[in-house]
Image (cartoon, rainbow, N blue to C red; front, side, top):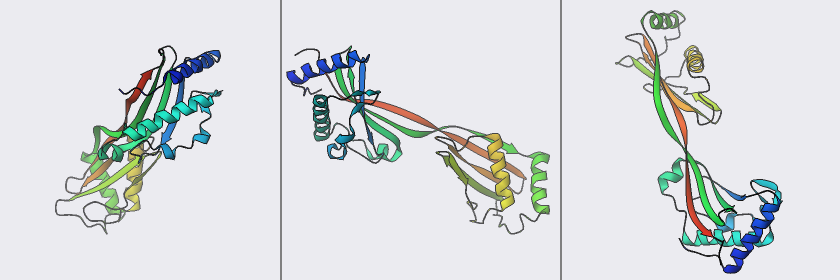
Length: 243
């Protein structure tokens, strides 16, 4: 890994550690929030005027000489293309940040990239069948709920849903026919979704489908929670304990 610090800069970082030690700090962190679509470290997009305190201790000011070193590190990372994710990573990314951290015990400074993405967990299902399923369909038939529905030749209609970020929705139409979902079926689906998979729309959320089989009078709810995965990559590091 390429070394970029001058002896004077290393000496200054040791003095920064003395300053941090006076505040009871062994580690200093400076965060650079980035948009999920950013595919490089863009020096010009950072508002350096807002960089005034350590991210892990807002009572600790950033010395002006340290900011000069931070600028040098970010410019080096930008010029060298130290961060260049492939297109798939950018598309799946939910959150990212860059962080320059100073470890006084190790006398080491490093640039790290943190990012997260959503993945799919294991699926599970719930089925309403037998007498229970028959009663549901017969009640809808009696109430006239099914009268305007087009039933495909295979007698199956699919209704999908999706949720994340504390909000969620059930689609307004069935996959196979684009028929609007009757309010009685929509209300029933929301009720069963909440009672079986409460919190389905919270944080990383979940998705799935209701499969209505009008021949067997069965309804199957296939549900999959999303999981949030995290990755940490060290892009650059250098020791400053020696000249």
